Image (cartoon, rainbow, N blue to C red; front, side, top):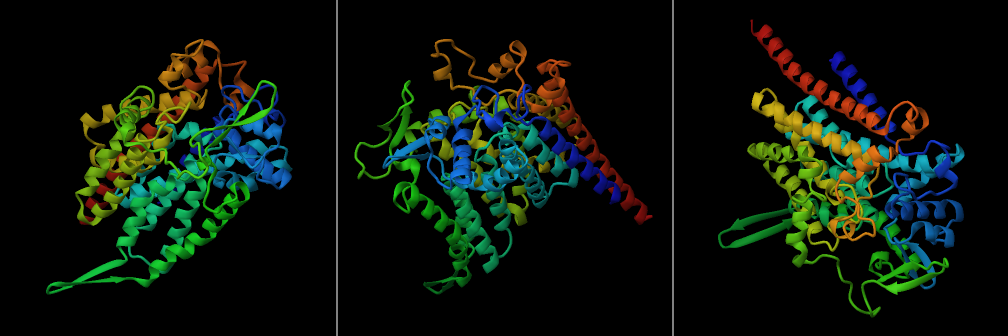
Length: 513
């Protein structure tokens, strides 16, 4: 037991160190992004997904307002809205609120950007732990479950987005906590907790309300009991269901108050205003209609079933965004969930977890922009990847001694880690094919673009590399060493899982004698 604790502790420290080595920053001045908001490729502010949320955190901390002055609005554009003469973030404020304590802490040491972004890194590490717990609940072993969590962080684009100030990892934390919450009997406390998780998820990103619907429906179903008596059916509802509303109230109140301050309505959010701000060459801001012509028209959700076939292809099969191209190791999780579903005691829980995966995939396949804009891999499917990765632990536990499984698994793990380290070390800004081929100077629309940046321009976004190794190693060699270290940990964990079972078997045989 002591050896296992020491091993797990060492693994955790190495995992944290690897993530820290990938944190973005420049060589010339490690505080560069604290004072000059450089939006160049590979930097922390390369995407408006980051800048708009960071601008809101900064506006709240520095000016005690939700609205942007002209410099912040230019910094955050195009992900800003203008309404009643005021400019603010298009995104829901959950991530920006979460970043506030980190911003204040960072400001005291002169590193507000670095510390603010560390909130996402912390959530990414928490998600690894939650996947380990989920895999164990499904029936995975200690080391195979740890390996499942490790592959999520280093074998998917979760690593790339752990280095950003975006909603993905916060959403995953809340979804995984909600999944763990619905296991077992419902109590008032568990319902209050689930209400908190669901409402907090809405504050982080509105689509989370859809992604978590299978969890909420299942929780509601567990409160409903039916009793048949001859031709009559009697329905009873447990009173502790009210805990969901009690738990949701604080965050929904906060969300409503924020909306009222920005849009003048408790239920109207920025994305539904139908406006976007454009910046003219002169620096002047102008508004243009984005979704609606009439303010009084009903809200149009950005989901269209006509997009679904194309969206599914982009997310599941295409070389632009799919798991097959960016992280095929995730697909082993499907095998694990199928294996777990054969155990009746786990079947309902597997159905709920699988429903979250399917809901996420189907919802975003109908989205107007299934590419997720300029992005690295299927960023919309990162929550689904987290759930699937928990199933990898079960697949490993079942087949890890099979020769026919070992080689394909290692190849998939090596490929997935290599691709996603490439993304983490360069940029998230890969255009969809339709845009890439029509640029004045066309660029690749796959991770080939990341490879070109690394090998031809020697670009590397790692602060550690830029500070200490850029004059000693090429960007490609550093990324290769990094990926090799990550894959080495995969092999060590794999061997540990085999020896763990072997030791347990020997102990059992010894006791039998």
